[in-house]
Length: 136
Image 1 (tube, rainbow, N blue to C red):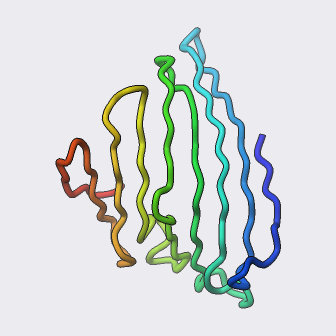
Image 2: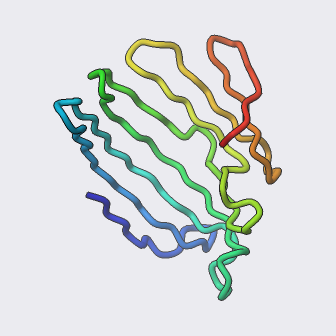
C-alpha cells in the first residue's frame, strides 16, 4: 500500500508530498518474502508552475526500513536530500544527495550522488574506503 498526500506549500513556497509505503513481496516456489516501509517527503523545487515536466527538479528526504529475503533487517536513511532533474537527458539518476544503508550489524554503506552534475557517477564509502561507481 502506498499513500501519497499533498501537503501544500512549505515555508519555501514549494509543493510537498508525504509518501508512505508498506510493501511485502512474496517470492514463488517457497522462495521467501521481503518487506519494507518507507516514509518520505517529496518537494518540488523547480518547475511546478509550468506545463512541462522537463524543467521539474525534485528533492526527496526520508527513511526506509525492511527485511530482506534472508531475514536480515535493513535501514536506509537519506542523509542529504536526493535531487532528481526531470530533464529527459538527466532524469534517470539522482544528481545530488546521499544515503546511508545498513543491513543488520554490517558496516554502513554511504552513497553520494555528487553536487548536481547530470551524470551516472556516484561514490560508495564503506569503513572509510571510498570508490567511484557507475550507475546503470
